[in-house]
Image (cartoon, rainbow, N blue to C red; front, side, top):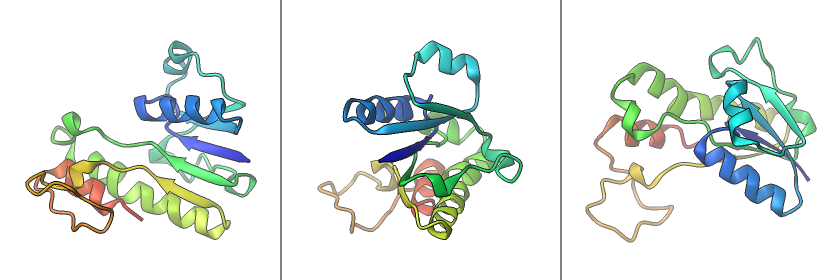
Length: 145
């Protein structure tokens, strides 16, 4: 099975890549900054330079993958500093990728966070209503395809 991990050089993405490689999958990953990739020493089958703000200029070969896993996101501690980019990356970008994957009949997995909940109730399930009050949780909630 051939997988593409978006954001392979981030904290979440690198962990996902390492786990998938250990399971024997063919893993390709995207990166934004080549020096970051070198520091992580990722052993992937292929690395693809990708800019989330230039998705039309850097098209990904979706049809050649069985599954695309989105690990790209603005983290909680940075969300308030740049709300416009947070909305784009956490909310719009996952939906754009999900649509492209559907167009190519490719499975899309979007990894989100428990921060879509306010934390007052606990024992959340996937069906629990999202009730985040901060921009991070709200944008992550909106990004769920």
